[in-house]
Amino acid sequence: MSFINKVVLVTGAGSGIGEAICLHFAKLSARLSLVDKDAGNLKKTAEICEKLSRAKVLTTVADLRIDTQVKEAVENTKKQFGKIDVVINCAGIYKPASIFDANLIEVYDDILSSNLRSIVSMTNCVAEELAKTNGNIINVSSVSGAFKCALYKASAGALDHFTASVALELASKGVRINSIAPGVVKTSILANAGVDQEEREALWNEASSSPLNKLVKTEDVVELAAFLASDKAKAMTGCTYPVDAGLALA
Image (cartoon, one colour):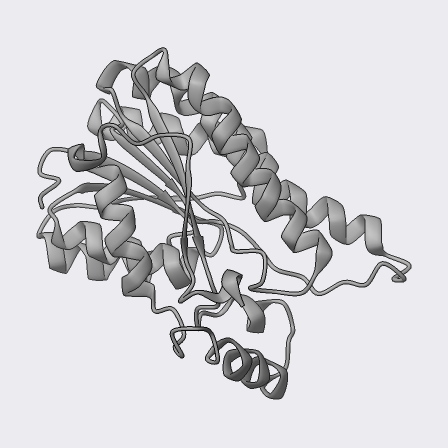
């Protein structure tokens, strides 16, 4: 599989699944536009990608909760490469919260703006460009059993529904959109949320007892992302594909 001359925009590129996807697409010779709000992590990812692809990588430091910064990331990509073929939305956050918390609505606003609103905004900004290239969008959400926070689950479910709902409208322009719903993957998302090491280990151990008795690895996700982004998936749109070692079945 090759993405030579294909322009791939990846959000959440600085760490976790987003970083792994960037490295994989660099190996597949994609022309990369990487977006993250953490400038240091973004630079590290870009440097590795440039070594793998032997091509210049575009980076944009952006907080995708801010519409103007979403537009900037898209405009930078268009200016640098002249087109966009694939958008992979990996940026997102997790925050533990209880329905009894005094700051619940504040946490809700933060999670939904990061995990849903930013992707709606990105889709709005790239739709016309993708129509020109018959491109596609891949959203990274989560299986419902991955984390116990109701707000996080709500954001993932809403993203999957958005993907399915907007697929018909995008299909009329020749654009595909799909979601990938990973199970529990060992990334920095829990540490970033302030979850301590003991709790993280407990969650990973619990998830390891999935029907396939394993944790999902980033390579499990990136292989599916590459397939969905390729012409091999040209008849696939509007669906969510779990990569969870059977976690949702348990």
